[in-house]
Amino acid sequence: MTTIRDVARISGYSVSTVSRVLNHKNYVSDGVRRNIQKVINDLDYVPNDVARDLSRGRTKNIGVVVPNVEHPYYTDIIRGIMAAAFAAGYNVLMLPSRYEPQVEHGYLDQLRRRAFDGLIFTSHTMPVADMVPYKKYGEVVVCHDPGSIDISAAYTERGPSYRAAFRWIQRRHYHNVGLVLPRGVDISATSSATIVAYTRVFGTAPEPRLVRTGVMSYSDGYAAAEYYHSQNLAPDFIFANGDDIAAGILQYYRDNHLQAPALMGQENQLSGQLLGIPTIDHHFRDVGAAALRLAIGAASGQFPVHSDFIPR
Image 1 (cartoon, rainbow, N blue to C red):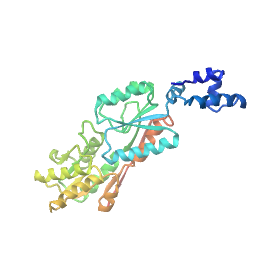
Image 2: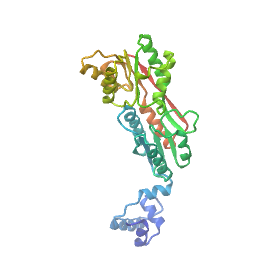
Image 3: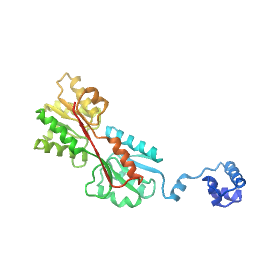
Image 4: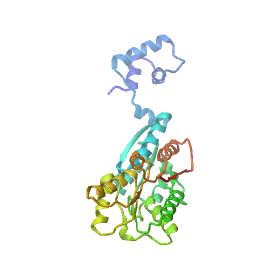
């Protein structure tokens, strides 16, 4: 493979002079520039971007760890990241993890080896404390409140909007409330915040049988509704983990000619608007944009983003 040293040797000029031509720098005469450019063209030489970036100490790449893309949380946060990255002149590398801790650790090792300038965890399973030692290799950003752990974070403040939503439900005298959540409370900040808000408003923890986890998509919502019906649980209200998920729940009841419970979604999706159901807008695109700014070093610290309960 042709290198810059080959161009220098054949052209008879120094590597530094060739480098100035390649990078369109001044201090090179027109005649020298033409001679070197001819050799570059003859050899069809293309600079090695990876080697160049490593020599500069940066790659202009940001890794984004994504467990899946089924839930609107991921699609919206990725849109925010991509828009901010494009504006800042950075590339985004999507890194699938499927919530596997060893895979997450592997991406941190890639950060240590300078595969990217920064790493954004849209969600994860490994403890946040285990990420902290890797901060010396590049920016590490999480998209939830890390509490007292010193790590960059961009996240939506769910608590106030969740409490407002549950107070709205309580005022309408619903008492058999089903909760449809993404993952278990012990590993999901979203699920934990939901349970905490519910308990604070209603004064008691939700009925365990009415709590469904692992729900991330329309089809998961459909399956959750089937579970409620098959178990004769008859919730009078279901708080869903997304408007599309609420649509899946509603479709199950309609397909089986059953009276559907009242519903609330999240993420202010088109489906929720068409159904006319209340929702919560977590502004995940803003979270994604803030996470990107942290990852490239354009900002520092922790950035909470306000979320809004939208009654309908």
